[in-house]
Length: 146
Image (cartoon, rainbow, N blue to C red):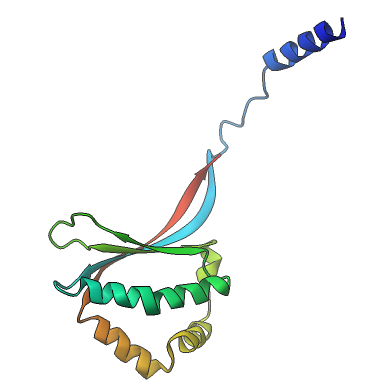
C-alpha cells in the first residue's frame, strides 16, 4: 500500500506544471573572456616561430597562469589557410573582463618581470616581426547558456 501511495505521489509531482520561466530573462550568462590572436608565419619560418612559442611564449603564459592572471592558453594550427590568412591562432582565456583591467604601471611591471628591461623586450618583439605577422586580434566573451 505504501509503495502504491509513493508511486502515485511521484507521478502527481512529475505531472505538476513547473512555474513558468520569466519570458524576459536571458537564456545565457557571461562566461570567460577569450583573446584570439591570428598569426601568419613567414614562409620557411613556421618551425622557428613554433620554437619561440614552445619556449618563451609558453613560459610567459605559464607564469601568468600561476599568478592567476589567466585561466588557460593554447595554440591552434590552421590546416589550410587561404591567401592572407594566418596559419596559427594563439588563444588565451581570462576569468572575466576585470582580469584585463590593470594599470599601465602594473602592465609594465609584469612585462619587466617576464621579459626583462623594456629595451630588450622591444628588440625581441621587433626580431619576431621578421618571422611572423599578427593578422588580427579578437577579444570575445563566451556566452554560457542556462
